[in-house]
Length: 307
Image 1 (tube, rainbow, N blue to C red):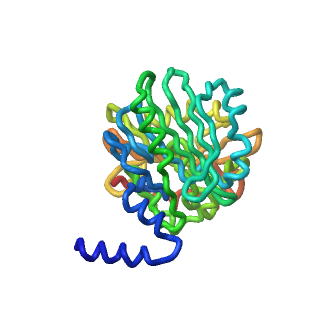
Image 2 (tube, rainbow, N blue to C red; image 1 turned 180 degrees about the vertical axis):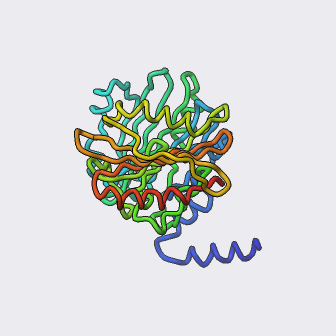
Image 3 (cartoon, one colour; image 1 turned 60 degrees about the horizontal axis):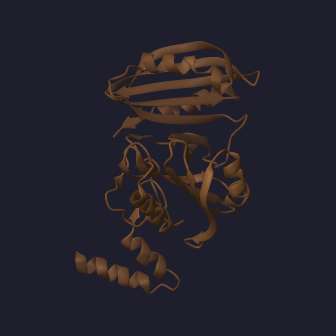
């Protein structure tokens, strides 16, 4: 087996222009669910609950791939001045190239006195962001984080499973809503999987996996979500339908909710599925074609499974 692997690597290295990237990726580790490779970091392991690496709950690297749809556009707002205007003490800021793509790196002191390192790169068709964080007075961790971020390699050609880093699966093959991106632990499914920075006024599905120290129930989650509608601009929410259904061997709570967003009619689809201390919330927001979108939301949500 070792001979076969070595032979394949040798053949691949004969392809012009791919030598450096392949060698680097062969030595580096792929972050599950992303196109990103990072040189191994001593003491770190693949993160649980997000895409990236973690040493402990305060020291980690998060990977957002894709972060948004256009690095060129986003990078105009990622400047030293914008970081400082946001209240951050910028310790280092520079432009560079990562895996052949233009990039920007910034190291700032966070609110807790520790360090947060940001690396963003891409082109006019995509962008990726990595965020490394460590506590105050941890110079060795700070150096490790910076070295790890600056070691990043990226392979556009790599086929990935965007859900490989989490504890659930969804099959979007038969739904018009398909995976677009993961942002702040939310998995976003848009019409035909189109990636955008934001989706104002559009119908969209957000999927949030989370864990709890204690077992939680569907009804508890539903009440918590309902009580938070207003802070997200959702008003006049009234439950239209609500029922307990079965998905696989587990019971789930499913609801349709009439509401208004920016004073315009909307219909929300909500499904919660719980398995012990793990839970997943599926929240669909339809701003038009309500019946059609409810069917599409259900088609997607009913494929939900725990690994």
